[in-house]
Length: 193
Ligand SMILES: [Zn+2]
Image (cartoon, rainbow, N blue to C red; front, side, top):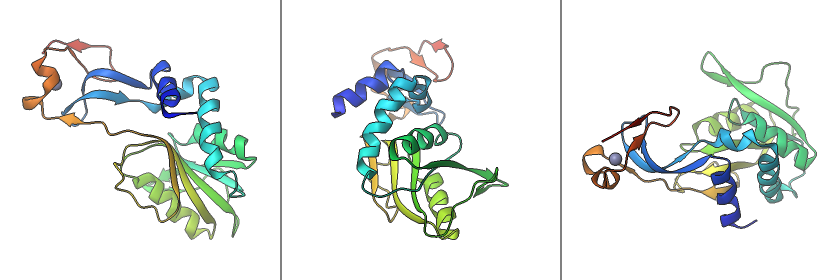
């Protein structure tokens, strides 16, 4: 799968949209990514995870783990491709941990996955969790890398798509200058600017 085919899946599923968006930070952008939308369609999820799993097929992965909520379906589909076990981590009282009877045995080979990596904070917490249980983190996989190359997890990191989404100060937004209606993602409301 080449980059254009991957982008096409994100666009067709509505996960990647182009327009004029009001971000929660108050800044404006011309692109918006909502990765969960890809997972509305098992067919697309399967195609993307199959592609991502190729990067880790020689790692003899025992367990794929993702942080809830974004990493749950991805971990499951990746585990299917890699013939591994799938689990997810959750925060309890702010601390990333395994619940629901999930476990990681000592020296298990563990792949950490996340749908979108921006700061990498959640992924780092999962890596620390796996290390604390004496599992071996063999790598990190993500559908989308928005970190602009600013992250070092200390293990191999592979993403399907690298997105550099520029954001603008509302006072100097080129999209506002063109009078393009602004959309607040998550709502269908369009505000004229
Ligand atoms: Zn604007």
